[in-house]
Image (tube, rainbow over all chains, first blue to last red; front, side, top):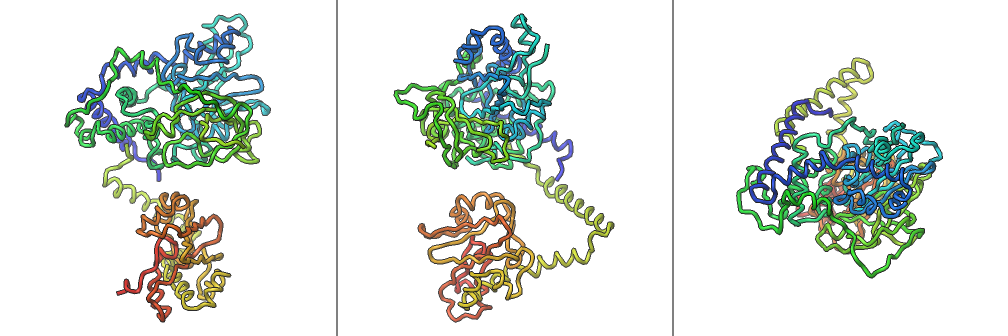
Length: 202
Length: 219
Length: 208
């Protein structure tokens, strides 16, 4: 059974749009939601909170060994030092990548993700392919991302089944000695903080 | 529940397909569905565990064929209906048809930043001590509740090691059913890849889950 | 948000699409000489009209009246059933399961739809469905409830998942009040569902 023809798909989206609009109207009329609050919620996660937060955390960990130590000991507090905290990041654990160990984070059961440092998760993170394969075939998943790790590297996959959230601290690329934090942060990709990518090279 | 959401290890879904320069939201309705879901948590009519269950509690075929925010939205409609906040005829009409049920509070624009910043920490106080410590060998129980649980099928019955004591946290299996927070000690438990996936499994693989004490027995 | 289509989309273009696709493939296979049309027709007629649960009912009725056959049936289902002329495809390895007052048997194929074609014909849609396949091995009593069947609390329920080439035929308990009946008449009491384990045989008074 092949897919539906193109404009049938569009009418499904339209049905969803109508339902969402209808519910928003009902909830607003009943006084359960304030439209201005809704707009702020959207703006926060569309524009304000995103992976640049996590990149600053990682860059600081690269540049400042004392910060890295605090991050490893109590990531929630260390991250809060930079002003990032709250919803879906109340309990964060930092996972250090080393030459022998590569960390990957998944939520097989839904889409748990450290919002305060990475923003909202991308579609692929929430998708059946990732959720099903990350825990059984992480090397296959890394290949989908164009990454091959040495055969002997230990791969640690962390399934986020509780409110605990994980942030991968990728390895600092060579050739960045003496770089300031802002410049280091530019090398830190979102995927490198999930474990499906590596930081950019200088 | 043993639903379609419990996907770890399932075959047949194909490759992971990242979208280059993916936008945060793919459609205007997704933004509204997202914001409505967060805002409607404010009245305190449900908790996050109830909302996760509402998302997963559907026919597996439906779950697998719906997009992420379609599932969020369907769950929101269900929870509103279950609690008599919004009824079917109102969602069809697109207008309130009867008086609202009184609620304790709603999310005001001025409170958004603070509410997001505060979040919903789940750690609770206790005088009890954890049953397990790092290094202990444990086995995940073979439980199959029809209600919400966070113990995935792929680890049930398998032997692992306590990596870390995370803390004393709200227990979703109770909280989702309205049976109270019932906090329990929460651990990170590591499983060898071959324990989970058999002798042909990746020998370099270790998988962990965060498991509450009621999920575990000494191995 | 259900994946609902509007009504005539379902009956109109989706069924037509399958009709078109099967017709197209049949045409191609014929043109390439891989299949013979007459053979296709015989296959369809065989399973639509000739092979069905009446075969299994005959087996059960004989087991009810003939103790030697009954014993043979439980020792070597394939041979005993073969002696009545039933066998072959999806009936090469048959095992008969004896219902008793304390044990009730149910058969399922969780992984696909394995079914003893030789004695029961092709499986019904519900047997191949996700609800049956998923629930029978975990909660058979709720499945029986869906069939309107309620067993005593202490009856042991044995569920057989047909994961290999073995095919299972449930031999239900002979109803009371049918003493002295001929095999033909007894066979009329044996329902298909009673030979899968989701039903019980008819009672003599149910026969008009």
